[in-house]
Image 1 (cartoon, rainbow, N blue to C red):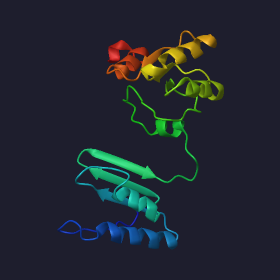
Image 2: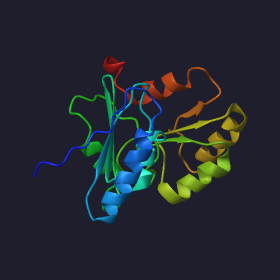
Image 3: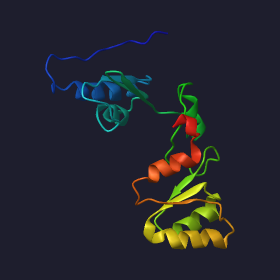
Length: 178
C-alpha cells in the first residue's frame, strides 16, 4: 500500500508548520494510523529539534533530511539491543564506535572511570575490560587493583593526555586502517 503523503509548507520560516504537524500526528494516532513525519532541516539534523517533537507527538517514525545527511528515528515494538543497531549500518563501514551497551558481549570494551571503585564495580558485574581509561590521579590505584586480580595485561591509559584517543585506537584498530 502506498501511504498518503501530506506536505505542510510555507514561503517564510516560523509559520507553525511543525506545530500543525504535531497536531496532525496526534489526531492520526488517535484514529489508529501508523504515522511517519519527515522534516527537511535546512540548518542541520538533531533528535532534540523538530524530529523529537514529532516523536513526542506520537509519530512511529521520523526522518530528518539536511543536505547529504539523513537521520531516521523509529519507535519499535520491543526493546532494542546493539545487534539491532548493527543490522542497519551500511556494509562498507570499517569501524563501529559504540557508547554504552556494557551488558552486551559484542565489541571490545574500553572502560572509562574516575577511580578504582568504579573499576572494581565493573569487574564484579561485567568482567574484564580490554583497557581502562582513567585520570592520572587514579592511575596508581587502578594499576594496583588490576595487579591484585592478576590482570597485568589490561592497559591503563590516562585520560588527561592529549593522545588518549590515539592510544586507544592504536590498541584496537589494525594499523593499516589508521
